[in-house]
Image: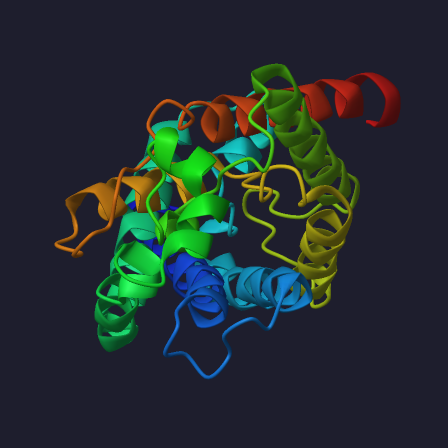
Length: 264
């Protein structure tokens, strides 16, 4: 596959991934959304179906990595690094485009949510403010969770470990199924299997950190959150931003090493 196919496929595929994945987070979070408070089950399945849709769209063009951790793991497995920068560029650009589309799709809901006095401050806001005081102290605004992840308990070693473990599970599943091999595309069931693995990780390991398991999925939308003209949006929690980037990259590398030693 050509560099242009890789870049276009990863850009489009990752944009769809973030549009649908971030979209379910917006649907569950924003006050004027019909799906508000649908819960963690909706988020886990929403992200799983987002992965499935994106994989089927991008697969014929780029092999549908959609995740720098996948790209690194496959490069370690195959020893081929020449296309890694192209994959990275498409993944991060696509993630930013997808996050921007979430904002466009929920524009009115974002405005209503972030101008509601019960959410951002004012009479009747004491209970909400008390619940979010730790997040506010750490610089995480009230809608940051729509764009990127954050820990329930801020413990750097644990948070990093959780992301490493979750990503390693994802990559072991991908590598042992032979998914995303360059030039081979995906099997008919590949996208569905990968989606169900993502749902499983979300349900089982997503509670502590929100399971980024994808550096582009977290960093690209976090940049968009910082840039968008959202009223009362609060901080983008840059002090935590390195964890969902470094953790998944380590997890992907470990999974690829284990695969090469024990399985290949």
